[in-house]
Image 1 (cartoon, helix red, strand yellow):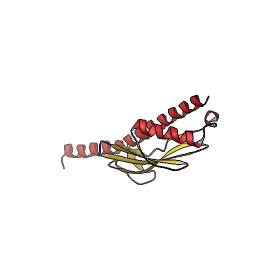
Image 2 (tube, rainbow, N blue to C red):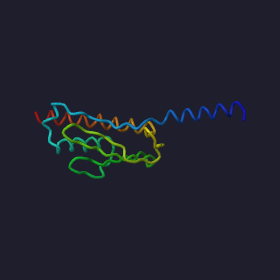
Image 3 (tube, rainbow, N blue to C red):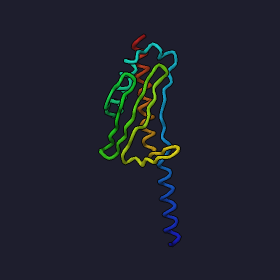
Image 4 (cartoon, rainbow, N blue to C red):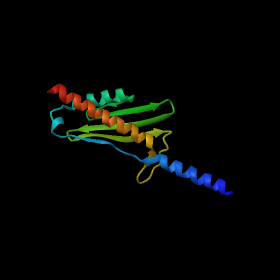
Length: 135
């Protein structure tokens, strides 16, 4: 194999490795300002954030929201958003075309982490809005 071909293989390997990152499960810890919010208000903030960020709410239970993101009919992400008196946590369920790799820790294309961080930030914003409306 020529030096150029070897170099290109190493470069491709490094670029692919750079795209995959450990899966992040963003958490919003509740402090006193959110203590007055009912579980229904918390869930409403989650649903509003999902809609705003382009996620589709698949299912709702008393303590969680199941949401999916279908990006340009090419990339699919499925998450569970759990909420209780301590806070909100977004957890990975499944994906398609996101370079998911099982392991310790599991890895996925970095765009997933950007999408769930943006969703968590939006949920936080809607929670702040709920608090301001309750005052």
